[in-house]
Image (cartoon, rainbow, N blue to C red; front, side, top):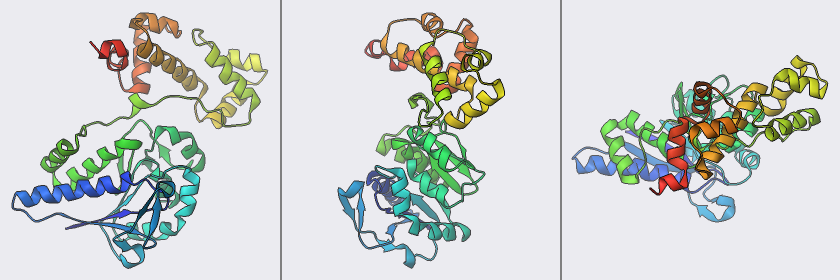
Length: 326
């Protein structure tokens, strides 16, 4: 029997605690209906006997205190509600226990921005990790030694799992269920909770908002110029000349301030503008392509799919309101 320990962290989200619990118990019920023994022992655990969740809206009484759990097979770290840094600070007491359990052979899984607490243990250093795309810039600043892959819904390395944001966490739980209980039980569970089992990317849901939470005035000017001239083909040399900064210095400062290279930033701005037009207008693919400064259909299609996981036509058909209603 697999011992599943779902942590009740201070300030965490109730859904990211209860939903995994229900999923593992549903597998137990399914196995029981087939005349088989339950596979999972599921416990909610915390540092105290009473924990406030969702910024104090809910109170939970864990099944156990972590000090009484000597060994488990899987530790699940839920997502925080509200301020992420505060959430990590409120739960630092959990870090030594999480590390200890991993060293004893337990696997660790973080849901959504629970990745911040997991990364605070140091266990993610040099490994890949996913989290909610809205928290990506903050994560990169706090944990530069972790390979953040926000396009992925699930990462799985050396017994450590992470998931993308919000309801994408359900896909990680199904992934773990398939690993522990088999494909048949994972499919049954996905049908019960109506979750698409084989969704692998959160790229179609990412909204690129730029990264202006920095104090480099010259880089902000470069960002504004790029965003106000979407139809233009802007070169790095052009920006460097405009700002009177050497090319290499500009590229270094831009990457440090925005976590994107200049070329990648320009591509992402154009793709975001294209997404908005696909969603809100009746323009065809070529019209949108020219509008955001591309002349090569293949280059546009390749770049668009790299950042969204969908072709331009696929994205338009999926998100355009008028087409969706047909």
